Image (cartoon, rainbow, N blue to C red; front, top):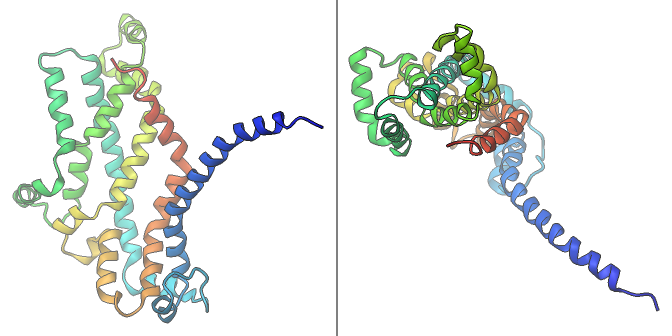
Length: 286
């Protein structure tokens, strides 16, 4: 009789792999499922959503929900607002985080570690705690109902970005900077021509994360913006839900899809760079 040892051994080796893939597939479906349901619900009529909320296939298909949602409120203007706020915020965040990360990683000064620790503590303070003084500060500056109240704080304060830049810069050999200094480069030339080219993966990852954070920012625009023409996409979507939430659920799902798809596509296209950069940032820190 043929031996059954080899098939059993192969089955024992494959079983853990199969179980691991099954668990990962289940988790993936639990995360992707709501997005699929949201997109398909945008093609449904309100009666179907109310009668059978768990159904996936629209019956009948109502593609007009998307054009109606786009035209119901000035989504085009909101997209423009969110877009240029995102570009300016990301550019400022990347630059200031890289500068601060370089200072903490390479410039020795008294109290550097204490200051860096205090800076990271800002990450642990909930935004809701600082909303009242933040609003009074914006009012004193005359930035209430202005995009400056959203752009400038995002450009100047990003503890995670500073930490990420510091970790990457500390992995760059000091010999590169020493060679640049011998050739006559100062701090600024060394930063722009030596440091920045060597941390491009981290800069890209931070830019993507900052873009997602800027696009999805809801609380600050809600506090400081009053004029509809200045609204960002999340804030306009909130107003949209207030007007149509109980009347047309399909329209709400279509509007939500419109607001979500751009950043979802960006994340899906750039997730490999984000994960690799975050993984690398923890390898070489001292």
